[in-house]
Amino acid sequence: MKTVFSVDELRAVVADWRRAGESIAFVPTMGNLHEGHVSLLRRACELATRTVVSIFVNPIQFGRGEDYARYPSTLEDDKQKLQAAGLDLLFVPNLDQLYPGGMEEDTRITVPVLSTILCGQFRPGHFSGVATVVSKLLLNVQPDVALFGEKDYQQVLVIKQMAHDLLMPVEILGMPIVRDPDGLAMSSRNAYLNASERACAPLIFQLLTRAADKLRRQDTSLIAIETAGMAELAAAGFRPEYFSIRRAQDLSAPRPGDTSVQILVAAWLGTARLIDNLRVEMPAPLQSV
Ligand code: PAF
Image (cartoon, rainbow, N blue to C red; front, side):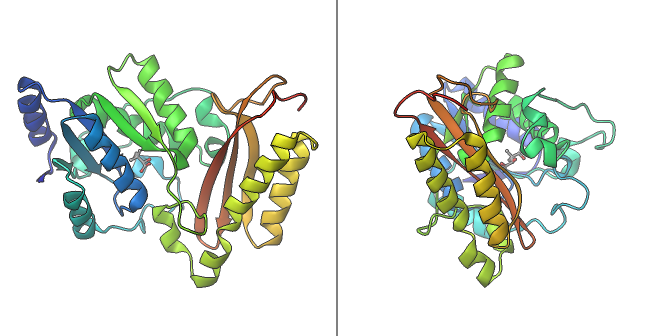
C-alpha cells in the first residue's frame, strides 16, 4: 500500500494506472475506520483492479460548535486496517491541498432540496460541504466507482444527485449499514458514548425495527408512528431531532401506492449525534399516509 499526501502525487499514480488500463474503486472517509469502512473497501477490491481510500476530516461540512476539533484521528491504526484489507493507495491530504485558496471564498457545490431536509435542516451547510469535498476528490481520483455507507443514507442520495447533475463519469454505490451485534450502526461517533449511553444506544435500531413492523401492517398512520418514535427516544434520555418516514428514492413525503419507504432517525445521546435508518419494502402498496 502506498500513501500519498499531495494532489500531484495522487494524480501521478492515477495517470499511471489509467495508462495501464486499470479500473479504480474509491472509498472517501474521514478516518477512524471501523468495520463499516472495511466492508466498503472489501467490495471496492471486488469491483476494480485498483483501490483508493482518502482520509480527510473536512472542516466545511461541520457547523459551528460541532465536533470538527475533536473528531477522532487514528491514522496509524487506520493504515494497518487498510493494508490488511488490500488497499493500493491511501490519500491523506492536508487542508492546503484541498482548499488551496482557503475555505472562506472557495467554490461550493450545492444539491438543492435534498440538502435542506432532515439532517440538512439541523446542519445547515453540511451537505454543501460534503458535496464540495467529494467532488474535489472524485475529480482527482477519477474512479470508475465510489462507495459510500448507507448509514448516511441522505448523504448517498445527495452524492448520487450531484454526480448525475454534474455529468460525472462515475458510478456512486450505496452499501449496507454494518451493525454491532446489538444493532447499533457502526460510526466513528460511537466513540463519544460513555458506557451507560452505549448500553442505551441500540434503542434506535429497536425503534426503527418496531416502526417498520407497524408500517408493514398498515394499521397506524405514519404521523403516529413518527410521533411514537420521537417520544420513546426522548423518554429514554435521547434528544431526538427527527424520526421520519420518507420515500426511499428521494426522501420526499410518502404517497399512497408507494412500496419502498425509508425510516430515518437522528438523535443526540450525551455529546454524540447518532443517525440511523432502515429500508422498508412494503408487502402491499401504502394505502394512506
Ligand atoms: O461520510 C463521510 O465520512 C464524509 O462525509 C465524506 C463522504 C468522507 C466526505 O467528507
